[in-house]
Structures are given as C-alpha cells and as structure tokens.
Length: 232
Length: 232
Image (cartoon, rainbow over all chains, first blue to last red; front, side):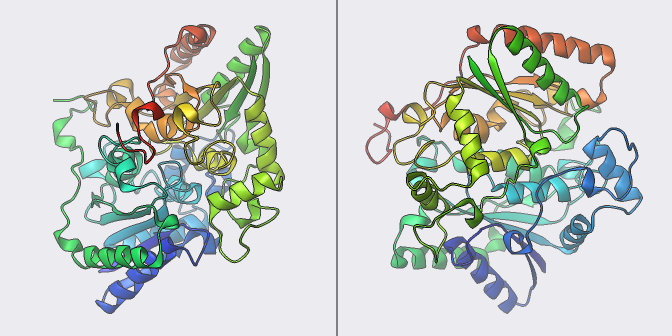
C-alpha cells in the first residue's frame, strides 16, 4: 500500500509523535510505501485565502469553492496545495495523527483539510460520501487526549468522542468518499508514566497491524436520498 | 453590553461579512459597545506553537497547556493572544461569525480558539462547563452554509447541524463556561439571489434584536460528576 501520514503536533518529542514514528517504522517494515506530511515541520499554512489561487474565475469576489474548481481546471492551485493533493491521490490509506484540541483537530490540520480537499476533485455536487472523490481510499485518525477514557465515552461528561469527531470523521473524511476506520485513541497521555505509555504504544502497534480487520464506520449513502438530497 | 464579534471570512463583500456588518450596526445603534476581531483582516496566526510563549516552564519539551499556565502566571503570553484574551474578558457577549468549512469553523477561527482559550484562565482542572473561566458571558455562532436547510437537519443527509457543531458549541464555548445560545444559520447563501438574501438578513436582524429571549443550549454540569469526573 501507499500510505500518507498527516501529522500535526508542535513537539517532536511528544507521545503523539512517538505514535507517528512507530507507524512509519512498522508500516515501512511491512513493505508499505510511507509518506509523511509533518505539518509543523513543513510550516504548513492553514489559512484558506485568495493566495491559494494562481488564476481567478472572478477576480473581484472570492467564492473559495468556486475558485477551487476554476483552479483545478486551470491547473493553477498553489504549489503547496497541489503537492498535498498529489500525496492524497497516490495514497491507499491516509492516517491523521494529532492531539485533540478543543474536541477537534489542531488548526494547522483543519487548514490542511480546508485547503487541500478541493472542490472539483475531492467533492462537489453529488461527489460526496459513496460518490466522493476519494472513494476507495481508507482513512484512520490517531488521536491523543488530555482527558481520560471515562470522560470521553458515552454517558461521560464530554460524551462519546467518536460521535463528537463527526465533523472530521463523517463531515470531512467520509464526505470526501473515504472508507473511515474507527480512530485509535491514546487517552490522558500527557499525564501518564513511561510504563503506561509503553502499554498504549504496544496496543497501538497491535491495532495498526490488524488494520485490515477494522470495521469501518457507517456513512450516509447517496442511494438513500433523491436528486435534491432529500431522504427517499 | 460589551460585545466582541470574531469574524472569519476571507471575502469582505461576502454575505457572511454582511451579516457581521449588520450586527455591528444594529448592536451599536442599540447602545452597546462593539469590538470586532476580523481575523482575516488582522492576518491572525492560527498555529499554536512554542512561539506563543515569552517564557518557558520547560524549555526542552513543549506541553502546550502547561506552558499556557506558566505564561499566564508570568504574564508572558504572545501579544496577539493577550490582546484577544483582554477582548474576551471585557465582553458580556461573544459572537462568532463564519462560513461552515467542513462542518466546522475555518482554520483561522479554530486557531483563535486553540491559542486564545488558555489554560489557567479559560479552563483547567475543574474550571470547565459551569465552573469554566468564561462563566457569565454569553456566546452565539452566526453560521453561513453552502448546504440547504433540509440537508443539515435531523434525518437529513448530513444530520442536525447544531449536534454536528458540538466541538464548538459544547466542546469550546460551553467547556469554557459560556452560556451558549443556539446558532443563527444562513443556509445555502452562496447560491441564493438578492431577494432571498434580504430575507435572511432581515430574519437575522430580528433574531439578534430578540437575543435576550433566546433559550440557551443545555451543557453538562459539574454537579453531576464526582472528583474524577465520573457520573454521580
């Protein structure tokens, strides 16, 4: 497989980074081709703006999605966006590695989605969910948290984390057509000792080795909705 | 009231920006003091990093939340963070004005939360929800979407938008202790005509004028959880 790991942690010595390094090592050793986009190390710009477009369909008014489509056709997307798109298009599996910031991805990773998931390739019109532009690729999030397991579970104070991550899991990865695997969660990692971290790391490696038996999350299907996207 | 409007749209002529301008005009005319953080106009940096800290508790390893606490005590947060924090602390009502990007806030606004909602002031330990650092302040999101109402409602293809926005509404604003009002949604606005936009704008102004009768969303309460945040 071709595997893209998108990593978003500001501290290279962090446990989140150690999980990413373990994924690179294990997946490479298993014979896969692994590419890493380390967003902090790259100084990735997360701000969607007019500067993302080498040409303009409408120079006087910025509709970001329409300019994405225009620039896909004109092959004039900003080079950093084009480079990430190329990595995604080559990938069979995309892993997103990040610490939970405010029950979501860090801004640098949000901006990677905002800018790289371009209309006209990744989505647009009925090109969503099982019609999405990234259909056939798998995605999995690798998430570290400050909170404990019981706080991020059904009935817990913050509720079920996989449901809370719907904007990412369904609204971005699933919307784009990817087969979305349940995330791996490393709970409370800034506050646990070395031994507990080793156990989390070992558990992660075991889950990654068994990724082919991971049951995907259920996503909406276009077959259940009419031409106006109303339920049939 | 002191009102802070945090605005995140790259096009000043956008309908999202028109909603923001209407809010500024109407709230100022009603005698309130209105401050706007126009994140694109400010060139706001959304990337949480070591550069946010004028001093370090641990110079060799970046734990972002711990350094936030250290820099609150040392009064050495980056000037742009300190300035935004001051605006929040002075505000009775915070309005977040943004277009829905991937069922969430644009990265520039996500980074405003990542960097400005600092541990030690806004949250930390049991300083969350009804114990949160921003207790007593109200917050409301003003959200424009490309999708139609029926696509973003219960039973619709993408599901209920207010539930989908949980990471923002509960996980950020509510977590920080704010009283969170239901969002205003302007649906499908890039694709509707001038007359329909006028109707959305009029509806928005009416809802804003009646903000005091808006029933807040229900948030978790610390009273329902024990010292380990387990349900009582």
